Length: 453
Image (cartoon, rainbow, N blue to C red; front, side, top):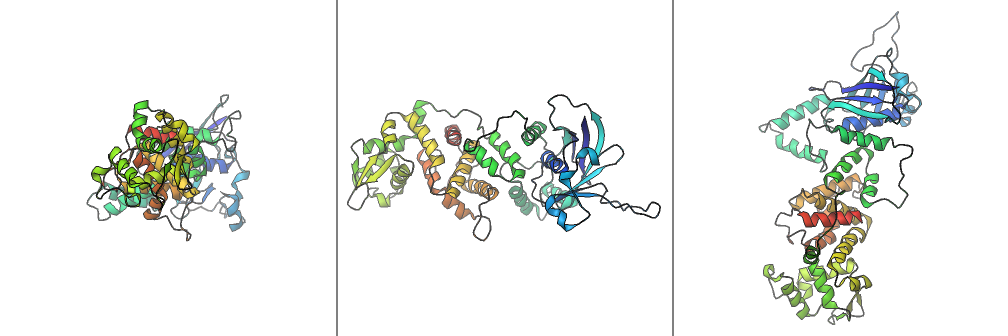
């Protein structure tokens, strides 16, 4: 038997509601997960269940007032000896035709009260999902928006451009909602929710990922707080990461031109550096001319230490595993030698290198998040990329030593190497951060290849 349960947020107008089909044997800790997933919360606050409406004062019957029952997570049991463990009770025990509604409170500060009413039962078909969203309306309110009345006030201010706090609230909403989903109070994607429920209750014969066998995006997803995984997975899908990550040979040659030129200029015999360890002036001038970088460069462009594009190209080629410096000479790695006449394979090599070669873990995570933004192709200004990456790093647990959020300049420092490669590949067309940088199809394909590797 399945229970048909209607859940709605008390006080919401218009009503925020869900109609669920749910296995009555699910313990309340799992029902908590179902509500978080189907309503769309981020599971970042405390919660409890009770069989008494928090807004209704209990009346005495025969001189006695019935004590409400309250079910809580195990870590809250010590706060009240009368509380019951939610892990020991299932939904079928506490929500019955005789029991009346069940109430679920999320975030004891904002006080989001959800009313659960049993509307019917139906036979459980073979292989039926343990929880399924049948119908509903509107997304969950924003976390920390002040309870249902604070949320209503927020929506009113958002709808009124003349409101004194309109711009400030827009900025707060953008940061709170985050970069992975647009804030739309009316949005509810039932199919997406049911896919998340299927992940919450995998079939017994579902394949399990072995440790070390995860893709880069799977590994990032699994490190996200559970309440953010749904949004992150949805954004991964929207970024087209399940699409092709291929490139035509002529486009691969055009994109990898700087690295091809440098590798071929060094050649199989290597290239001697100056006594100070720099590229010879003639090679620096040649690079700027051949790669058409001299048009926007002020100066003689003949000293590597004063010609940033060439210096960055050489340093990134070393980091990516194409060249090495040995006894005053630049030499090609064995991989670079194999790729001298194969731009397509070089394109794939660079895609893999940008996602796997980093100085430390924070730089790696920042790079993967940047590649995701490139694959999605939604950002324009450099600040947009930084904000999106900063949000993702915070979700992954990165912060300052004092626990504060990472500043934009810190995020920028983590992305320097990755941005240099993207500039050299023509994915970003502005070395100085003055222009828009919307990634086009070739850049999106390379980002997908990097994240697939």
